[in-house]
Structure formats: structure tokens, C-alpha cells
Image (tube, rainbow, N blue to C red):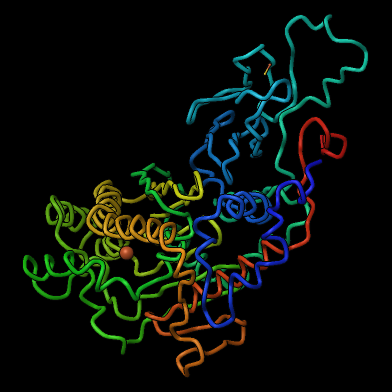
Length: 451
Ligand code: FES
Ligand SMILES: [Fe+2]
């Protein structure tokens, strides 16, 4: 059993109150201190629900995918009976990573060091030269560590290493309604969705910079100005960022609790299809869908391409962009992060619709996400190198009449306000100070495992 005191930096324990302030200030060390980062991997990525994958990524029996959860290598596997398990990809013998493939289909995993073999539910299946082990060697206690909590919500699989974590629906809270909205968009036919992997972006910066950014519309007209100007020059008004010209608009920023936040641009976007800027093949594919289905049905499908107008960040690591696109934040180090993009394809949709969904997902990220990455790297450098200015300011919207609390407890502000980001930092502090005992699964804790 690992105790928190072994991992928590002494200077951080009990001091998070001072690092995240009620006036919207957040201390730079949250982005630069490697001890705080280690503590986050334990208390946030080890203590909360974390998004693992979409079940359509492992559709067949024995399919698996490897991921990381707060830097821990993890195998997510579909077993013989169709159930899904998440296993720590760390051999209980001498610690080697057991599976190094990104994905595949396997009923068993064999460790490449001495050949211990595990069933894909984590149980130890066999060891070479078994007679060399004495009577105390209990195969049942030498399985791969298994996540004690795993739940699938309408295809999205979440896991937690904290056995006492709240129920998944409680964790979603009022964010569940907009999460359902995203999923309902894909729920058009009986054959469900497939999920394809899109681009991966790595930036030299802390993972929270991306998490903040996806709840931040304040930056868009400034950071992405070149994109907006290019669109205007080439395609005229009404494309992509054109709807965000002032602070006075009906769009919303929202904080739901449990760290989850939303930017909702839908009140200013009538038609995602009309709003989307041209890209190669857009008109040809659009015409093909109209020919196939007729104007009205085609339009319903084409409005599921382009950008849906929402960013929903489910804390800590999932960002739903709607229209099938979602992103996963993967912290690699205090100053290095992977962001992986995926697109859900509607199995019953015309093929052009799915191609357009992928193309539009690539389009915005290629022209705009690289702007954000450049900013993240500049921030990271400055936070590391300028100790004389220790604070960041997330106070926009605070103590103004722009923020209001709904009956469900969610806080709504203007789209440019830092309402959601501030909420996420309040939750960050809650998680970092939450009293739970991390469980080392596998050899030591195997007795309680359900079999
Ligand atoms: S480390 Fe895996 S079998 Fe030895
Ligand atoms: Fe951006």
C-alpha cells in the first residue's frame, strides 16, 4: 500500500489554499513544480474518474488499447464475455511493461522479460519453470493490477483507481445534460458509431494549460486573429470565428461542478454547415449527400459536420467538441503534454458525411490549435523563468452581475469570462486535498478483488 505521505511534497500538503485563491489568482508553481505534478498524478488522475476510451475503439472480444492514466501505462481490454477491464500495464514479477503495442486483439499478454503470461482480465495464467516457486507462491495474487472502478456511460468508458470515488452520474452532475446532447447527435441509427484516431499534438507545457484553454473563449479573437482574417479575406463574412466580435452576445461560459466546464457558442451559430469554412471537396461531398438523400435529410446530416459550437471539458482529461470530435489530455511531465484527437463516425450516415466530419476536425485544429500550442509554450517558459511574478489571474467575470447560479447549481457567465476555468481550479484544490487512500492493486491488494 502506498501512503500519500510518501508521494505528497511536504511543502504542498495543506498549502494548496494559498496557491489557488478565491480572488481568481493561481500560483505559477501549479504549472512548474514537479512535486505538485506528481501529486496531481496521484490525487487527480489516481483519485478521480478519468476518461479511458470509447467502447467503439475496442469493439470485438479480446480487442485492447494501451493508454496512460496520469503517466501510468494501462491496458484497456474487452474480455471473453464482452465486459471491459482496465489493467495496470506493469508486470507483478519485476516490473516490466507487459504490452507495448498501441492496440490489437489478444486473449493473453506475455511479459517480454521472463515470460509470465496473463489472461486479458488480468489474472496470471502461467509462469515458466513453475517448479522453481515454493508453496507460498500464489498465482491468484500475482495478477495485473486492475482498476477497482470502471463504468461505461453511453459508450464512453471511465475508470478510477479510487475505490471510494463518487458514482459516475454524481460526478457528471449537471454536465450530464450537455454530454447527452453530444452523444444524441450521433445516435441517428441502430448501428451506432465507429471511432477513428485523428492527430496527436505534443506541446512543451503543463496539461492544465490545454484544459484551461478549452474553457477560454476570451483568447479566440486575439490568438486566432490570423485565421479569422484569412477567412474574411478569402470567404467573406459568416465563417468560423466571425460570430465572436464583441463581448455582448448570447453565448455562454458555464461551470457545472466537479471541475467540468462548457463554452456554448450554439446561440450564435445557426448552421454549423453554413458556418464552416470551405475545405477541399466540401461542395462536391455536400452535393453528393443532397443527391443521395434530398435537401432536407441531407441538411440534417451536413449540420452534423463543421463545428457543433461547444467545448465541454469533463475534468480532468476529456474534451467534447461535438459532431463526433473529442480530445484526450495526456500529461507526460510537468512541462509536457499530449493531446489526442478522435472522431466518432456515424455508421448509418452517408460516407461523405463521415469524411467531412474528419476533415473539419482536422481543419480547425491545424489552423488554430497550433496557435494555442505556441502560446502554451511561451507561458510555460515565462512561468518557469520569471519567479518575480508568481501569480496568474483568472478573475474575469468574478463579482460582476454577469455570473448567475442556476437551480442545478451550475454557474453561467458571459462566453469571454473565466467562470469555468475558475471553477476547475476550485475543484483542483478539492481533489488535491481530498482524503482518500490510494490503493496499490495487484500483488498486495489482490485479496479484495472480485473474481
Ligand atoms: S518482469 Fe515480467 S516476467 Fe519478469
Ligand atoms: Fe484556441
